[in-house]
Length: 263
Image (cartoon, rainbow, N blue to C red):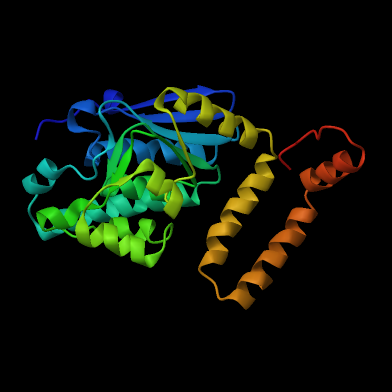
């Protein structure tokens, strides 16, 4: 296959502590080619230790948010070794989103299917236009959405997850909100404003506190309840000793805005 121009398939913009990464393969419905996943991974790795970035938004250009894996690319690399490498690459990308210190928001203007639905489910928050739809339709082409279901099943209940996986049918943005796949639905014309307001709310908080809380949230989910309480108690103690927690409590008691130091 012809090599895609790396500088065009993903766009990055940075404004006031908010980094927006925009999938830009509109002609391919933003399918996750290896090149696009490489670019996303590179940017996430750069963002991880960048203290100037407080929130990440994943958006897209074109008629779809993300149509999943690039099927033409999959058929062009038909060996077990290449398939294994591609799915490992995708899994690493999704885990990087979950493990990124900064919150990640999916801004979904249109359809998200298969690994595109996985991408939405992997983000910490998701806001969708009322025109968006979501599906795990692999079963329709003989390829069960096994890796997408990992993220999707950690967002919504078993019965609804299995319905999406077994039937391959789409759900509307409103249904996706109801079952917990996304946070908010809004008219498409208001999508940017709703996401910007959400980003503004998050960036007004202590970055250290956000980082501490996000990491703890995902870690405790995989623990038995007693272990989770023991772990989060230790997190609370460490958090309480941080300068920002002390400043936040003092500011609350003194009825003034806090001055965060990210420490």
